[in-house]
Image 1 (spheres, rainbow over the protein chains, first blue to last red):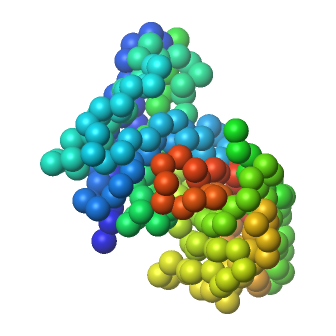
Image 2: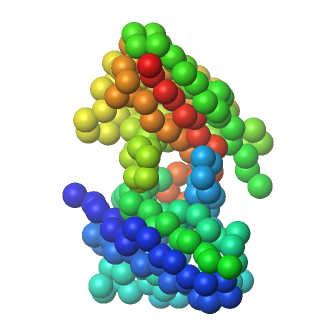
Image 3: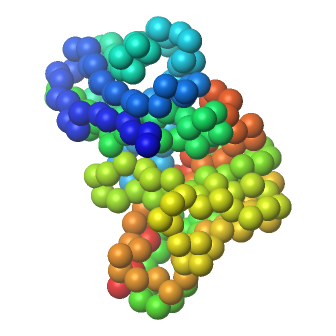
Length: 111
Length: 117
């Protein structure tokens, strides 16, 4: 079945770049997403990428997609303490709106 | 932007009782709402998909008689946890979409933390 994998933890210093990686298995996914979850809160959509793209940049966020390897990454430039949160990648399932989430990567930003 | 609310934000109930959680789209009509469950430090797991005016579609392993979903209007879906047990304690999150399958049109609620004692 569909599966999405992420590393569980990443620690960076304020001002550095953060790179969060994700692998997925469903090659029929149309969109791939990155969500941010702060403690005790719901999910905030950060960005998404259409499956026929290989890169998307949105201010401090850069998404890279390697469709051949089914690898997705999120780069956060100039990481700030306010970026500390859990980041989930997700793929849609057959373009139905159903999302399959990874386990989430906890990003810790040290001052 | 589109806003989805959930009520209550947290609830504590005794074993054997039922709890209803509401999910509302505040400024758009949601043809489809999704219900997720999240255990501590774990990912979100899709429980069911509900379309307005029709029966919900449950994911494999989710008991439809235990987790009753009603999507009576284009702005409201409810999840009722019936005869709750401590193992039902979790963070329940809904999302709403006006056009499922399109890029960024799925919006998440803030979640409801359920604790069953």
